Length: 99
Image (cartoon, rainbow, N blue to C red):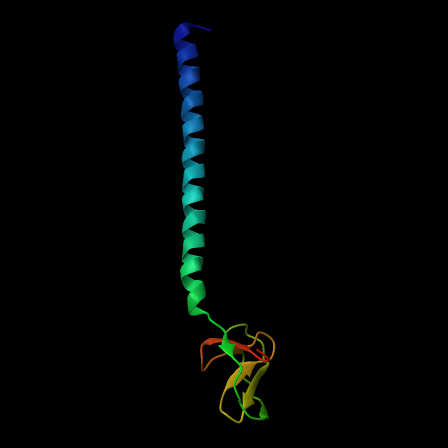
C-alpha cells in the first residue's frame, strides 16, 4: 500500500464516519421534532370532566371518528361518546366519567 492509497483509504473512512454522523444527526433532529410536536398537540386533547349528561338513549350506529369502532353511545343531553375509547365528538376531547 502506498502513502497515496493509505491517504485515500483514510479519507474514505472519515467520509463514511461523517455520513453516518450526518444520518444520526438527521434522525435525532427528526425524533426531537416529533417529540416537540407531540408536546404541542397534547394540551389540545384535554379530557372533559364528567358533568350530568342524562340517560343513555342507545347506540348511534355510526363509527367513532377517533377509533373507528361502532360503539358510539348517544345520551339525552345530545352528547355522543364512544364506549371503547371515550371520545366525545361534540367536545372534541376524551370524556372521563367519575372524575
